[in-house]
Length: 471
Ligand SMILES: *[C@@H]1O[C@H](CO)[C@@H](O)[C@H](O)[C@H]1NC(C)=O
Ligand SMILES: *[C@@H]1O[C@H](CO)[C@@H](O)[C@H](O)[C@H]1NC(C)=O
Ligand SMILES: *[C@@H]1O[C@H](CO)[C@@H](O)[C@H](O)[C@H]1NC(C)=O
Ligand SMILES: *[C@@H]1O[C@H](CO)[C@@H](O)[C@H](O)[C@H]1NC(C)=O
Ligand SMILES: *[C@@H]1O[C@H](CO)[C@@H](O)[C@H](O)[C@H]1NC(C)=O
Ligand SMILES: *[C@@H]1O[C@H](CO)[C@@H](O)[C@H](O)[C@H]1NC(C)=O
Ligand SMILES: *[C@@H]1O[C@H](CO)[C@@H](O)[C@H](O)[C@H]1NC(C)=O
Image (cartoon, rainbow, N blue to C red; front, side, top):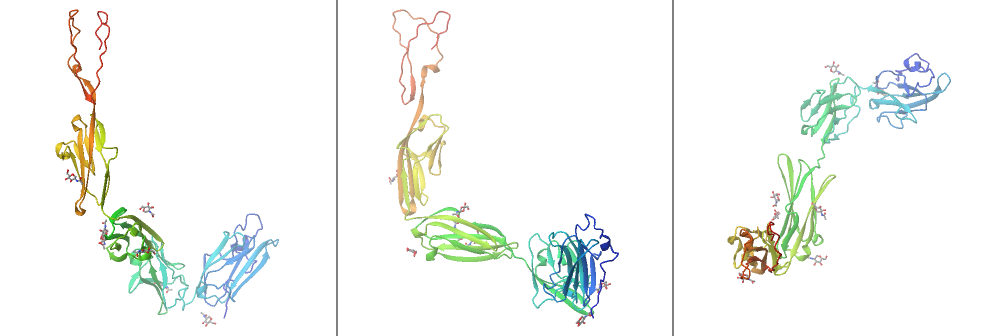
């Protein structure tokens, strides 16, 4: 009962044949004998397509046509006035619903030069091109991409509905929801609503047919990884270490957190995991605990986070001290020097300690900060603002870690240098007076400075009359 639908001899009068002029520039692409963009034939009919071109031709058939199919026949001939063209005839018999799709004829050497026609092969018992097994097909949703339910149909006029299980019917609006018989349903901007089980449904002769799809949205966006102490962690042998790695990820994400740490091989740490979800995010915690630290536990601790292809990590370095300690030493010897008028001066001995000690600065046996508002303690240094001569003295730093009974003191001497100044200069200079020859005269010079200045007298010949005296 096979029937020929398109039976066009190669010597015809259609546009296909009119192109057969043999002149240069014609057939830059192959030409099909059908001018319509689509054909509709019934099941069991024969599909015949003719293609003509300047070079050797090749057919590309829909994926539903098996590569090796007894019903496919291709005849290739030379044609045209001077026999300088190539003709190819494709015959598919019987045509079946699953053969619905785009049929393309192209140049063997130039694939981009092609002609195509979309062929629907209607079958009232097979409205969907694909017949589904029991299991719904999985459709992956990706952020920023279209979502397509690929329920192509064998009849361009089929009335297909999209249903979200159990009974939400979604009508195409041709803005966000688009129906296309060659593609199925396309959702331009899929939202969370489109996560779940869907089906394309059509009723033919009172029989319901459906194609079901399960949408899956692989979520693996890690938003943030936070270790509650980054940088250096200073700690003592025998103490407990707890590090909390917190991962914020997109809702529905699956995240795995692992640690690398110095004593991992010994399994010295216990790791506790927790998951909590907020309205918008997922929070994953992994808390690594080492109950009694040993020296071997010092080193790098890394929290590795993976979610699908996404990876993140964060780290901290742990320093384990044997015991609490204070090391206090002079930085530049026991005597330091500053100059009067200096904007600020910092007394900083070398201090290493763990845990952090308390620090008190004394000046000449009294708490420095209480003596003068220009003194303040910055971390463990004493800062003196607007250095003055009176700041010279004996300074003592008292350090202590009360809880371990550790105390250390260090004393240093501050010398404040003062530029020499001549007291008489501040008194208004007198005009040179006249004194009696042979009389005794005492000239005074008072000077102050730190260290004490040396005084030297110089004598200048009297300037000629009329000139002021220069000192
Ligand atoms: C197509 O052919 C098959 C097998 O010969 C037959 O069972 C079927 O009814 C035919 N279908 C149509 C629509 O003619
Ligand atoms: C689809 O629905 C329209 C309007 O209800 C109807 O005219 C048409 O025949 C239907 N198509 C098919 C293939 O049933
Ligand atoms: C980090 O988190 C753990 C567990 O919550 C806690 O025991 C530890 O004190 C925290 N560390 C810091 C430096 O906050
Ligand atoms: C880990 O830290 C987070 C905050 O960063 C906190 O909410 C959570 O309770 C901590 N986990 C544990 C076990 O302490
Ligand atoms: C850990 O293992 C190393 C060698 O594998 C061993 O020398 C060390 O003593 C172990 N430490 C603990 C705390 O078990
Ligand atoms: C530790 O983390 C810092 C920044 O968080 C990074 O610059 C550094 O390379 C990391 N160190 C290692 C050894 O991974
Ligand atoms: C440090 O100084 C304080 C106060 O002057 C004194 O009581 C203490 O004994 C000193 N400690 C040491 C270790 O020198």
